Amino acid sequence: MDTNNLIINLQDISFSYPDSPPVLDKLSLKFFRYDRIGLMGPNGSGKTTLFHIIMGLLKHTSGSMEIFGKPVTKEKGFDEVRRKIGLLFQDADDQLFSPTVLEDVAFGPLNLGMSRDEAVDIAKRTLESLDLAGFEDRITYKLSGGEKRLVSLATILAMKPEVLLLDEPTAGLDDKTKAKLIDILSDLDLSFILVSHEIDFLFEITDSIYTMENKRIVSDKEAHLHQHIHSHPYGLYTHKHK
Amino acid sequence: MIEEISSNNSIIYRLDPRVKIVIIILFSVVVAVSNRFVVLITALAVGIIILFSARIHIKEVFKRLIPVNTFLIFLWFFLPFTFAGEHLFSIGFLTGTIEGVLFTSRITIKSNAIMLMLISLAASTPIFTMGHAMHQLGMPKKLVHLFFFTYRYLHVIHKEYTRLINSMKIRGFKPKTDLHTYKSYAHLVGMLLVRGFDRSQRVHNAMICRGFSGKLYSLSSFSISRADVIAFILMAGFILMLGILEWIQTT
Image 1 (tube, rainbow over the protein chains, first blue to last red):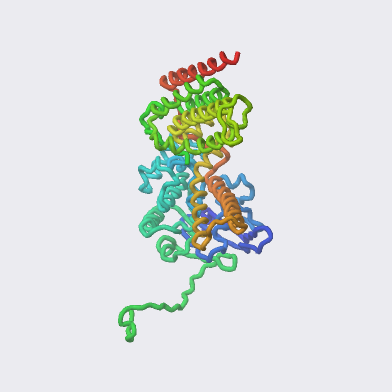
Image 2 (cartoon, each protein chain N blue to C red):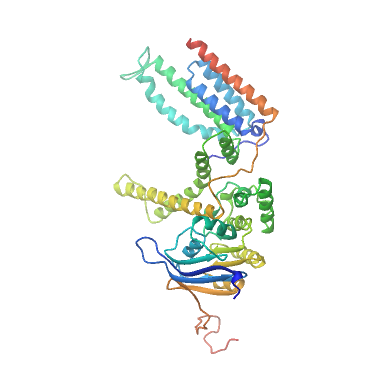
């Protein structure tokens, strides 16, 4: 494939917390521009850890990592990574730390060196694009769970990333907010890796789905024969389904 | 919790937050070291006037004065009896002295005057503006950050606390005076600390991901208006007058 479009290239990445068995073991992943992949896996299988390694929040114990064609090892290299890759945290309360929504959304752009007016302008436009116009002066901790999630997404989108890493974005959301999130994500012209336990959600907005198994990422395209159990009136009589 | 409670169309609300902070500090220091009743009562009176001009709900004010005055009640139990001086009244073998009563009255008036001033000026300022004003006045960055984050996460930690308390309650926990109760509370506090620490790291990580490098930017800009200057001169003059009044007595 086109190497210019290879955004994340992980090779044999291993990671373990001190004095515990490895969380990731020789994991490899190639992520290309315009990829939209879903990642499933049981709790504790290392999905969040993987994201944190990509962002440089955790340091892998062995293996090599190239992002945007450049090997990143030092803290300095991650500055660029963090500018171009946006990570949506599992808990929105971790992401939103400013008292008001506008201040939080403008935080990233200000860190990128924009002037106050530019940052406010971009924050307002981002909020608007997510149907959150009028939320500017709302107090972050008083937002509802769904609103918090959308504002968190806004704080990341305001930095104009090229890639999104989304860590269980639908967790704890009602159907309406979930549908809104699906709309937003499918309209975005961005590549992303999406961690979720909800297969329907993944089917809807990703192109391929991977699973975490044995501390690695595997692509499971094989069809599995499986049985459904269901019930309905007159189910006792022999019948066929389409 | 610290929250703005004043109506936002009062003169006090529109004052530059830096002016308010400086006035609070000056006022508190001068009143705290003053001893003359004239000075203290004038200060209390001005506190009340400013409170009214800030248009704060009286109910809220009383709610905030309760903690201070609860503490003062305890002082009233002890202080009048522990001062040497002229006999005023006796309860059993305890003797209250005039000096003791006067001393306790001074503390009571001082505390309430300072609290009233603090409530009227601080409660009429949005917390975030307050933080940035402190920063602009040269307050160390770390303290200002601490102030912000305490305000933001107090609510989250309190929610965590209620969650834990509820989970204890639904498993039949009833606080008693025994070791089990103390242990359970110790676990609760320990858990809050550990969770707080974990959260602080997650928040920090999230900030790093958005390019945080130790600097918080403010979106609000302050400008000193003529009203600010006048208010400042008036208040500074008044505080100076209190100081002089106090000083005349002592010399």
